[in-house]
Length: 437
Ligand code: TRP
Image (cartoon, rainbow, N blue to C red; front, side):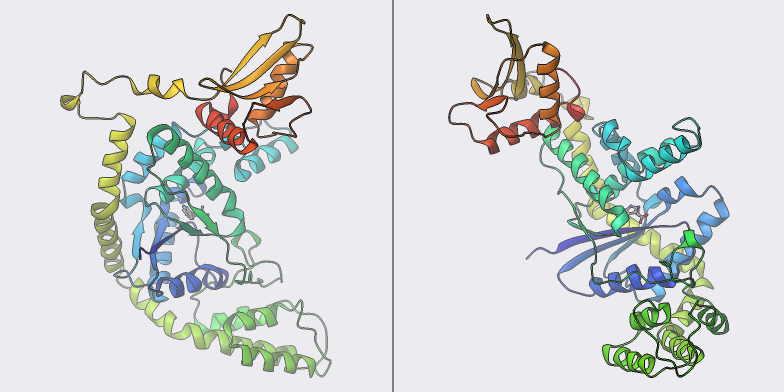
């Protein structure tokens, strides 16, 4: 049985906090110990450059995140653990993918759109302060994923669109150059709760409410005691539902311990006692990891060696040979092996590619049909103007098939699935539906 390839990247733009640990590091390491997965975990330092232009911080964050994953038990002999910028095939693939990625697709990326919306709200130029790197972010991420033919990509909900874009881009490449890429799927861990931060909102660097993963014990205690609670007095029953103290406890405790903690809430445990219990629980899990972390940070050259070794083995095993095939596929080839007899491939391909034909009938109305070779897949009714016919075609290209019978009929013996497949092929052939009919 071949193993499922699971891949995820960690942007090296911050210091790991408890939210990262509970939401990403701990479940990923547990998953990597299961035999059925081949896991890829990497430090996305090229992605970090999009956000952070302070060199010391990029370096520091890369070191801290690498040390954190190793301290938490990641075994670099068992999983692929590497740094993005140690794999030159990633930027090289990024360019190959850039040339097939629709600009319109990238325009729709949430992160880019949010930047544009903000600029508009502030009366600025749409792209003010937007780097081309931010715009291209999804393509770089697609290269990370497609280079290793990853099947599952565990990510947060905010990243799901990027995985869908990687699928789109990979699909388009496959359509043009043959089946090279596996199309990845996002895996959003539904049962991994998002951890609340000090103020009760989701723990996140952008809210400045995090508890760093490896602060010294005393500082951890101070942070835990600073978690915002309500003013219920000792002895008063406390609801667990919206309590950050309770939810944090649950993330670190066994189910029986959590049940006992819930009973203590119902019995009116004082907030101070609840926080003390929470602090002890977190510290019990983290203390041994903290020690390993400190030992690793004291020997950064070892971390460097681990990362380089991972990248070197991975390149030899996957990246370098795969990129050689991809270069060949797109035509970046050894000229001494040129075949002068070979017929142009594109000509052969386009004969049976679906296309739209627009024409005018004797009734003076404007029609279109979707044809593939000799077959008519879809035939429109007559429109009053070429513009209307064109708009209907544009809607079809957007995937709005609608019900046949209203303004088009399917060809004889043609099913709607066949039409959908032809439309998808058409769109893939003509970036974003732009281009001729
Ligand atoms: N963009 C991801 C994040 O911010 C990090 C990342 C980069 C990533 N490349 C990836 C995640 C590839 C999964 C797969 O969380």
